[in-house]
Length: 251
Image 1 (cartoon, rainbow, N blue to C red):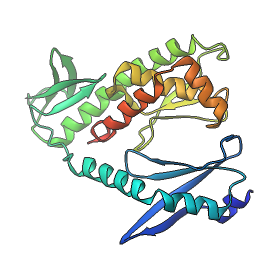
Image 2 (image 1 turned 90 degrees about the vertical axis):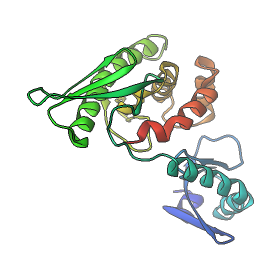
Image 3 (image 1 turned 135 degrees about the vertical axis):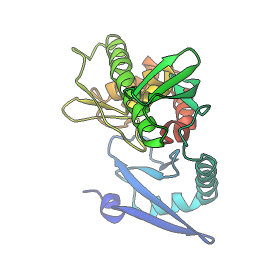
């Protein structure tokens, strides 16, 4: 274990005025740049990437130096989150699918089976009674089914362009509150079913990101060089996807 890992394991915190900034440190042994990189995730979490040669003091100094920047980004994430109310599951609400907005249209038919389908500009849900729970369940089932089909198609399409991918990896869906996807050491790709709400180009970015992990199971400079080579526009797509995060995850 490196010095920085021993000294800054788990959640860390510093004080900035009356505010407490909490963050986690990720040690990256293959990180060539000597500086510490700080990221504020869309949900307001602060992640600090540090090379293995960094000391706890240098990491803390880097976080303190950028305290104002971190504080502003945390506040922006909080404002975005507070501006999004929970869904009421009534006709007229806006829903995302593949980056486009559709209107929820609820039909109540006492003898009907719970069902959801895309019909023109509407995502139509039929339920036997007007209550939020069956409407929410119908939408979640519909999104998961569409995710199973669309994400599998995109995984196959993107994998076909990569020389190091010999066969399409196993894919599974798992609901996650802050992650779009992951790649296990065994090479299994896990994707968030809510990703199907995002535009196709953003889906392809997440899929490529995880497939590059089959070659580089870290976020080293080599990882990002490979990502750059196959999708030069990925930073803009990541920014677009992160900007949609609260709306995508809203329930």
